[in-house]
Length: 341
View (cartoon, rainbow, N blue to C red):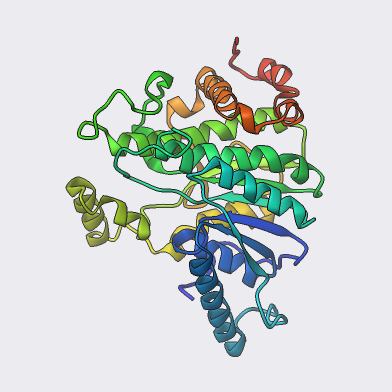
């Protein structure tokens, strides 16, 4: 199984529903498996049905092994984990909306949305929606899912959470809307590390912006750095010598971690009962840390928010926009930093 959880094991009711994007491998797989083994219901939101089904079969085999050992602390009652696949391709806003619509049709509540899917160090590329690929896959499509499912989460009961899996590399990124898609650069001059870091910066900025709008609600937003994790993400920089060397050195000195170890911070943010009601925290190794200054800049956050809504305009109804921006001005005035549109 990979080890023990780093916080007290909890029992999750089967009625508590968790969406985890990109959960057929790596950190997402371990997150989905453990939430299901602790009793929760998991929706695996992934691109590939076959890979998701293989992952679910593997999860159940591992669950059977633990049930046989009797090591799940009374959580061995189910014969199968409550894990289900739903298709989501974050590189397509059309697919993202199809996922939202299909989930709504299930009639399920939603208690936890874990935005885990992502790509890193990808060569310069643009999606079918003409967005820079890191921007859309890591940030924009997840924002769209959250925007449409927030009303449902508000009706789903106490302690609903959105968890944004970011990265420490956000600290290397600069905020600059004029170059947000990098079209100014040739493929040869495109800085893959910078644009990956930017997408992770946007997630932390989203945390603050969204919490301002959810301050009096039952929904909280947190973000995190899972560690330098040995996952399939490495396949994106096989031709990137600097990153290959960095990962090699991280492994050599024991700085990198397994997907199970990396999932600990995500699990902590998603299911630790002590974190009910906690918002605006960027977690590293399950503890809150201060993110980079750019991430905390209110003017930057609100500029990104407006840019995001403009980018998604044809996918957001007036009701959703109103739901998102209802009380932002009063919350901004209560903050220590003022923002003017």
